[in-house]
Image: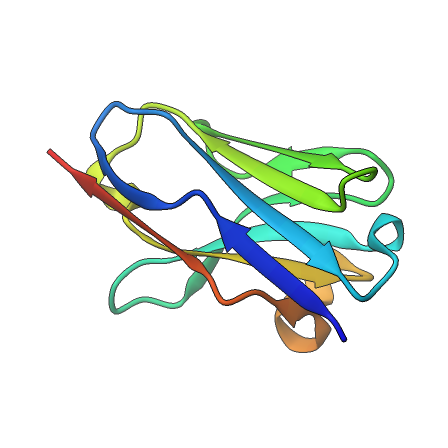
Length: 117
């Protein structure tokens, strides 16, 4: 049974740093691209970063850094200098090809990040 469990969210202040974690089970983690998405209130899920199975990482925002630990089946998202518009639910996605993640990948339940001023 595939599971993705996100953690690390919470209520933080603007300017803070936060690290989110997503621990996977039920599939061969090394063979999957791992992505983080953010869904702001009233908006669709936006891709934030991808940790490719090749070992390369792609961060789509200046304030985020994605990393993965294949030994722990875990992908991380470090968010620095948090801004109000970083507020949202952060979802982890696992897909054999990252660009097909929204259609064919596995999703976690999400972790809420709320940034206050």
